[in-house]
Image (cartoon, rainbow, N blue to C red; front, side, top):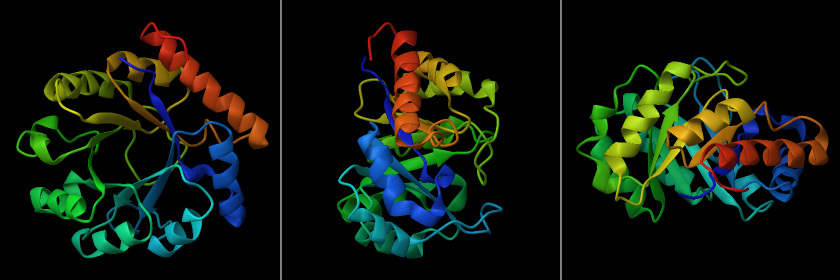
Length: 226
């Protein structure tokens, strides 16, 4: 058992100064940089594409954790890999060919992730566990930042933890994460906590304090010191 990693989502950052925001949050203690890609079709919002990720890549050597909330997703995997993503996560609901998608991502030399919406049962992962490096459990309905955490998702995190026991698979939780909910997620079995609104406030010193607060609460929940 280790202290969960913190992955600030730049969805909550100041888009007018994205490069600086990535540098600041990395300096403030982020483990991953979480990149929410939305298409206005699979989810009711539009964010950015591979060109923005490519431009941001030179601002940090942190792990770029790219979450594709787009459909179709298959035609764009190579572009997001080439842009500098380290982890590419696809929504299970966005493809009829999840197994193939995960194989393509690994074939591009990237870690493969799969995300599940709150209403999606984890049994859909049974046949792809040997091709997954990260499972992202959505604790809000995807599309917008600042939503309230759905507490009913906690038993799902625990069930997925049992599913992957003994495998080198990280469990990530995305949506409504703050020190209080982050602690609950860690106790349920989460390894990575995505936080947007709870991190990006107060400038770089605020970012540092906010990341530390989430990390400390999560570590304390599982009996560790951050």
